[in-house]
Length: 422
Image 1 (cartoon, rainbow, N blue to C red):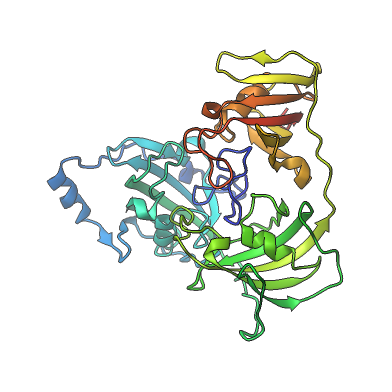
Image 2 (cartoon, rainbow, N blue to C red):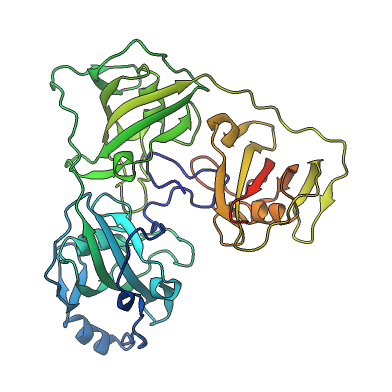
C-alpha cells in the first residue's frame, strides 16, 4: 500500500495513500513475548462533562493541544524524526469504545516517526517517549484525522490511545539537497527548480513510467514524507492524477539520473484543501527528487467482450472477457491484479498497466472499493473482466477528490494474476 503524500489516492484502492492513516507492516524484530500481551482491562473514559474535565487535568498538555500521560516511562532512546519505531497500541473513541488494538492481532506497528506517516498527535507524542514507555494520549481531531472520515473513524473525532514504544531503530538522517538560492529557474506554471546534478538520460513526457526517490518538505523545513525512509522508490505514470501536478511538471524537466530541488506552489500541490492534518491549506512545498528510471509508456487497450453482462444483487455489473478454471479467492487471501480504471465516457483515470506495477491486497479487508472486492470474489485466477461499478460501490457520495467526483460510476478492467498466499 502506497504511503506517500505526493500521491493522490490511487483510484482502484480505497485509501491507497495511507497518510495520515497508520501503516501496518510485518514485524521484523524478535520481540519478547510479554510485549504481545494486551492489558485485559478496558479504558474507561469519564462521560460526564465535569468528570471528563477532571480526568484531563491528570494529563500534561502540549502547546498543540495534545494531552499525554506516562503510565510507564522507559529509559531507552527517544526517537528522532525519521527513526523507525515499533509500537503496540489500543485506540478508543470518546465513549470508551475500542476501535483498534494491535495486541489482538499480535502485530505491532512499524513506521518512521516524525515524517507524517501517522497522525500528528502520534508523531508529537513519540518525540517525547523514551523506548520502553507506555503513554495514554487524548488526541483532538486537528491532531488526528481532522474534518474527514477515515475508515471507522468519523470526522472531527477526539481519539484516545494507549501506546507502548517497544523499539527504536535509529536511521541515517536525510540530507536536504544543497542549492544556491540564486540558482533557481522558473517555468510558466510558477514551478521553481534548481539542478543538483544533470545527466544525458531519457527525458520523460506524459505517459512515460518514471521511478524516483523523493523527500518532501513543509515551509518550516520539516519532512512530511520521503521514499528514502521506506527504501521503496515512487513509481508512477507521468501526467496522471496519481501525483500532484507540480511533481508531474517537475519530472518532465529532468532526465534519467538527474537530481533537482523543486519549489512547488500550493496551486500545483494540495491547493486550498491541503491534505488532512498533514499539509495545511494553501501550503507551498519543496521536493528533492532523484529520477532513477524512465521507461516509454505501454499501450493500454480497453477490454472488449461479447459475453453477457452479469448483474449481482448489489447492483454491480461485470462482463467476463477471459474465463479459466483457476482458484477462487477467499476472504483474507492476498491477491495480485492488474487494472485500468475508466470514467463512463471512456477516459482513463488510473492504470496499474501503465505503471507496469500490479497491486496486491487482502480480499475482504476494505483495502479496495467494495465493487472491486466483490468483482474479485466472482473471478478466478487468470481471468479478465470488465466491471461496471455504481458510485455507491465505488467512492460514494464524496468521491475521491481531486480525481473522482462525487457520486461517480466507474469502469474497471481487471486481470486476476494470482493468489499470493496459497
